[in-house]
Image (cartoon, helix red, strand yellow):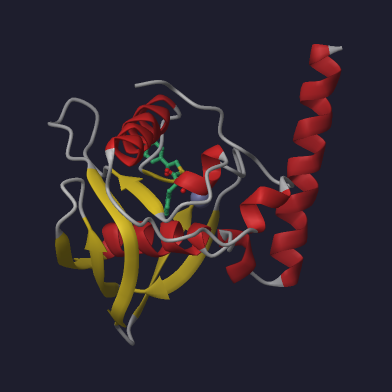
Amino acid sequence: MSKKKILTIPNPILRKISEPVKSVDKEVKNLLDDMLETMYAAPGIGLAAVQIGILKRLIVIDLSKVGEKMEPLFIINPEIISKSNELISYEEGCLSIPNQFAEVKRPSACKINFIDYEGKKKEMSANGLLATCIQHEIDHLNGILFIDHLSKLKKDLIIKKNKKQNKEIDRVIV
Ligand code: K1U
Ligand code: ZN
């Protein structure tokens, strides 16, 4: 396993649509292992392959807390089968938009089809934070970021703060 660099905005790769995986071979498993290590190191609760520059429909998620047993979920080629009408609001963050958070409203529950680490077809129902995280990660596979769900005003503010943060980092490096 090796930790990869996480791409951040405005990298145009983050806006590309990821391709379905044809078979769950050794290469795909190695990639999923690298994604998990990268997510734990960040730290984060989810990661899509595009965030490390790989345009494949692969997601890792782990909502377990520090000190608890790790419970990684490997989600390959997810498809949303149903979403609830009821919405829920969570303060979302994104490893590709460091240090910026905002309330995002999404369906409070969803059901997905996907392929697991062993290459088996699975169906899963999720609600609460897991449903939010799954939808956030599937958005990444379609080139969508959480800021796209905000008003133009809030989105522009986050982009402005991100630019300022990047300039400050450059100044420290120089
Ligand atoms: O996809 C990503 O960028 C990861 C993102 C996932 C996510 C967070 C919140 C709501 C929806 C999706 C993150 O993990 S941001 C970091 C974060 O939320 C966190 C980090 C450490 C402990 C607990 C949470
Ligand atoms: Zn994200």
